[in-house]
Length: 288
Image (cartoon, rainbow, N blue to C red; front, side, top):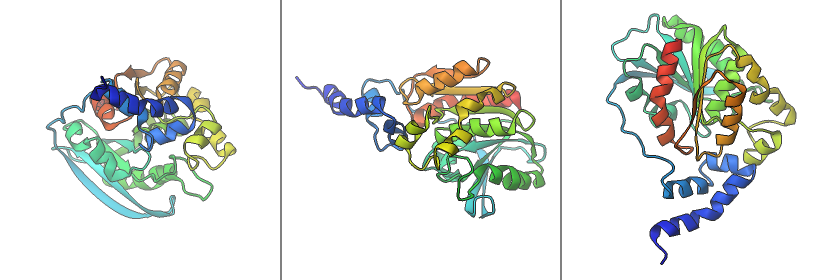
């Protein structure tokens, strides 16, 4: 007899096989165009439940301006812990995933509720589809952060000499890349959840043709090659067992033997990122 559970598994099985098999599956699963693997794992109960949102409350301040570094108008959000003044607060920059922006990073992760009274502020920013590195057209999201937004926060009284970095999915790749570029003098800690890191340019191109301009661009921004530069940066790297990026996350963790985090139950979705967020924020707090 074909039960509903078996039908779900059968319907997702062909897509899941493709999701496990080729470079194109990375980006398709990430963008939820090909959610077959996630559907299958949800049918099998491997993704885990959406956690209950905490009751914490934080203040959210937003703004927009014309970015010279990105050559476009960008938005940002600053999530400040309840009851805390801006003066002297350290900053964690949060980098969103593919298709997101500064606002979706706040709502997808329920940042005001999870931040609560933590002793730092969270800055979310628009990275577009840049994959968080300088592109051939001059679009430079990292320079936007370091040369434009952090100085704005410094003028508001926040402490920006050394920052924390947190990213999920595409933003996880971006957080690791930014930490490699800035080094321990500027980065107190980095956290990457489900980092969308590709092992080769062909895998990246098959997944998302817009992630890198060409093979040379991939080579310049290869997070795996740059991992030795994170030796002195405290790091948290984690991923769900049922995520298409689980294997590459394991590779990153093997090459960063002092990192914390790890693999646990979960898929490439907000349920996993929210379940891990309290531990991530605690890790960042101990470093900041």
